[in-house]
Length: 426
Ligand code: SAJ
Image 1 (cartoon, rainbow, N blue to C red):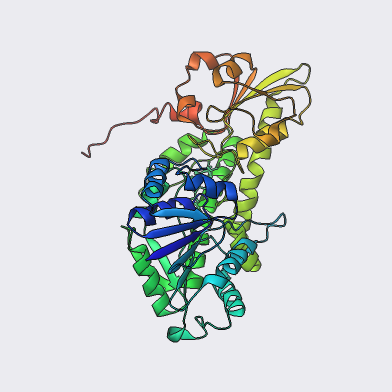
Image 2 (cartoon, helix red, strand yellow):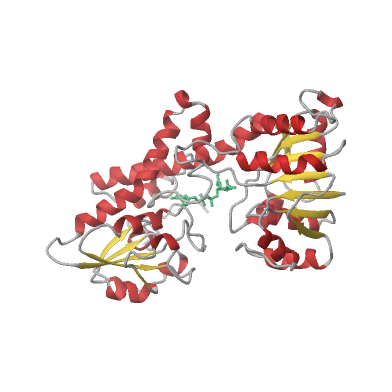
């Protein structure tokens, strides 16, 4: 059985690796020739634990090969990006061009699975395009169980940094456009998924994926709103959350300088766009989270001494702790906004990268290591709770003005509420 994965990015490449490691013959397709060349040399172009060794192995033993144009296969898995436009509208053009690219090699009996996070209705739109391009073949749902080609939607839901483990162990929703489509997709994913597989409609599966990330966005917004409330009332938000979370049915997330990454800050807009009159909570959550970098800058401005130039050190640029990914990062956003504040000298430190991200270049920002940044600073702003920042000696921070957006130094180190009286439970 041959499976072809279209798009060899953060999801597609690990997916190629796990299919190949289960004995399937895998053809990875990417429009970028340098990605294809790299994979064919057994190398990878993304940072993900354990992926390099696995790719090297499956390329060396011939289970995986890469190409720039689709070739015939028994199953096609589409894992291309679905970004949003400046106006927060979903852009499914990569899905449609992936469909267009596989159309010429499709044959009766093939399965097409869309994995990309997609607005509700995308699987049907993609299928309509395939049907238009291949009038000689029949497709579901129009031709029902008798259709020549099988089509399903099955979203990835893996966490960057834990992709291989989560790909295998997470449960999965599978939404076929016909019963046979679902059954074939179940058969395909059973080759490597140890989690449960749940069959539903393509539309429900599409909304399930968006819902997961919107849920997290709303919950982070709640934590961020609580941080603003605590600031108004001069209370420690981390203590309030830690104590509230001792309730058996309360589980509040952590506030911070905003929500980054390529999923949680994007996917809620797919739901908002589809149901603008029914998404007041999700829209507010988006606004609350996107306003956070501005709130951090306002906090910094509030402690600045307008009579002299001061040095502000920003620690951390990635979008979440212990990774090197600085794309769509609220920390980068904060530094970018600070670059426009007059009368400050700006230093940034990010131990996981070698130089300033391109969008921060040319703004007079000094890039150095965390300790020298702290040493030279009047104001230290902690933007990412990297493990190593938690190990910084409090002595080094002693005479500094601290803006700790993650509660790493001001609260989490203390860990337990002061007045804890141990209970009797085992
Ligand atoms: N964040 C907070 N407070 C928190 C938790 C997160 O401010 O308590 C921030 C992080 O700092 C980061 C952002 O949210 O900037 C997102 O980070 P994340 O770790 O929550 O999620 P991602 O974007 O790395 O991955 C998410 C995951 N979705 C969910 O947990 C519901 C992952 O399972 C999805 O597969 C992935 O999106 C995706 O591809 O959609």
